[in-house]
Image (tube, rainbow, N blue to C red; front, top):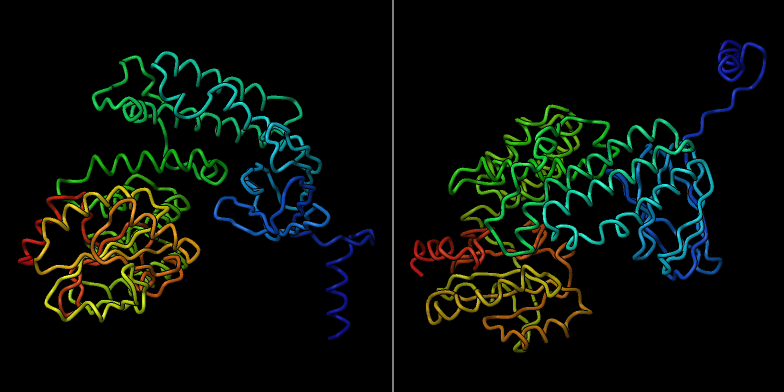
Length: 464
């Protein structure tokens, strides 16, 4: 038996002529030298991929081995400088770059050196031809179309160079087209925003037929092209907005729209999962949303993650006891816990916010008006700040500058690290919560002050 096994092994590693077959490598190496960089790590990001890469500050170099890497476009975030890379299995990527001098292009060597040089040059062309997004979308229609056509033609000429491999070239030409289409798709909306003209409409000559021709089911493009992924996400979101009935649940409509429009299994699974990760915490119809997600998904790992979120969210349904917070610093002095606020015959309207959150700050003036309107009634307004500890001074300064009222509390940690926010599965800020006088949940995802009538209707129904 042992002899038979040895013969089998020998047959695997020897060819017919007796030469040894090298085992197939299942790894890729990236390395390089970086000037003017002081951090210990960088981040490599790709399609559903993220990895920390260590940097040796003494030598100014790095080297890492990537296992089970898939061919595709990646970004190595070197501090604030993104370095685009095309990485393939069994390849070697080596380059020199200056983290601060962005006008100096990286110098590439290795397997995909020509492609990576192209990607670096491609990045420059956006600024040279289009300027920046605000400048581009501020142009009148004719100038806008001329600019993006020039940009598209320039990139096509660059990638059609003979040194660029054909397989990459074919995919990149489609990527360029997707970026062109995305710019077309965004023009009307962004032009309206920049000029404050909600009535602006593109002319009859605008190439809307290119936008209408977009397919939601190009699986290879979805993996290769970030532009394509964003483009179909934007179009599906717009379509869901049009399909949502008055006072309907947008999150549920969005999920249904992806299901009806996307037939490619990879794309559908990826889109509904990424949507559900956040929007399951906002939907007004939790049970129906979960049932439909499970019916639409064919990815068991995704289903397990969303099921875990669903089970947690059921604990914050209306009527359930609210998760507790303890000993948060009170702006007026001392420590405050949720138990200190309940049992006094008053509802609590809780605002979870942070000083870095622009949307949070926009709510503050409207929140103050609600506090004045309901002053002396059976409700307390509580603001819980979720900045990290080192931003405590900024928290206090913001309260003073904006003359914030109500009960101001400082949790002293990020939402991802706080039990209270974890229990409420808070994925975005600001988040508003209503708790009844006995500490039970009225709404785990209450309307914002800027929702106006919706919030007043809830307060009226509670006899506040």
